[in-house]
Length: 366
View 1 (tube, rainbow, N blue to C red):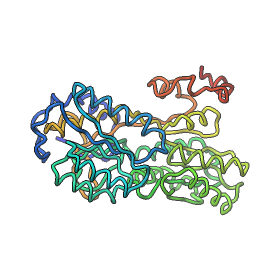
View 2 (view 1 turned 90 degrees about the vertical axis):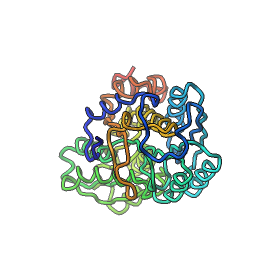
View 3 (view 1 turned 120 degrees about the vertical axis):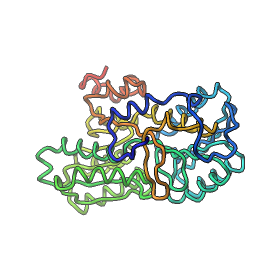
């Protein structure tokens, strides 16, 4: 019996992920997957990612998903890839093309969760199951994998309060949320507000168009002008890319305050090493990518998700979507070794280039 995911405990998630066996171990499928039930390992998987400005998609998500799909299908599956480059209309066209080309299943990370709903329905009508990846797309999706995104926001908010200490009572923070077209951004915001409200004054708050660092930079400049540089004590940034733009604006104004982030991008980790950025949220991409691959292969082969997806979530259009939700970690100077280095995301050499060597030595990162 699946449980509705409201708050997900890491222990329960560990059990969920441990249960992710190969698709061949699953039973009969109780969902509508067209004539895919006759498929074996020779399947065609459409992979649609939203943009290439954030380093994670090309560096981690794509190769991890492709690798797992190959492993699950004895190297017989074909992965057809497209990146929408932050263009919702282009992504709709990419889905249509994959439907025309008769892929057996889609893994979809939506640029715009609402705008993609019609294309998801087209895929479903063509008997092509859809796995929503990282962002909860609207429409009749068959499965979903992501992180507990409210918890991501809470993790960021808690870290910011810890960094502020007594200063939380004396000044104001700026909140730089993600794009309004991304449902995850709303969940990050919800989680952050649940921690920050009543503890610190929010002087200015923005939904940042397309998550672009340059837009975050412009918003931050506006916030500095509106609030005054002496009154800003910290910045909630929803991800590392925006944190880079924010920190550029802060440095130009002579402001040194804690800034949050997310995604553990290399540039973000390096800023954490130097102290320019206080923290990031480390999201282990491997279990998320592998869960997407597991569910996609199972759906393409007409098999059940019961041994893979132990949770369920509700989208605005679809209730009880079988889901795998992955826990996250607050990444600071203190645990770089135990997170991104230990997991093989980066080497010490990649982080501690000549520019950052002195800062790495100072915090014992060798």
